[in-house]
Length: 221
Image (cartoon, rainbow, N blue to C red):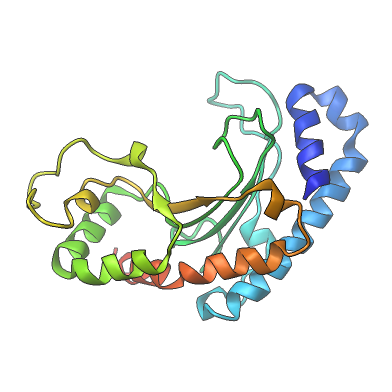
């Protein structure tokens, strides 16, 4: 992944079509290597999460070209790479497993991470998750504990427990969440090491039951 980070860092500093077109062959090589890694991730994840079987690399990866139609930022290219491995593919709305890399000065997420769970759920999904936690908070706490090292991002949390949920509940912090994704940092030592695939799969396996808990809820929405 070191070559990928180096390329993205250069793109960050030269985010224009002339530079990108002059370095298109480098990008295609980076894309090919990244896609091969994602292919191995899909195989590995499907070995412990059968809902992933049949998902393709195209289902899980993103175009590097930014959608500029409604953005004041007119830089044409993304300066990060990510893969979202989940049942039905990245647009299905199901919880899944996310691998993300970006150079140091990029500001999309701000670091290299592994993530799982449900990012940017709909209001209906949020309500269903909260209701499930209200009635089965112990199980939610259990699957979250199994995902050791992964945490919720507090920026996606309300200041107060929403109406209709007990503020004195031990699960009150979970009622306040507006996003049910969890993440853990991915160090450069791991990212550039020879055991990256094994490490990522080991970490993702810890989040399997967290994802399954959420996806059982999403099936009802």
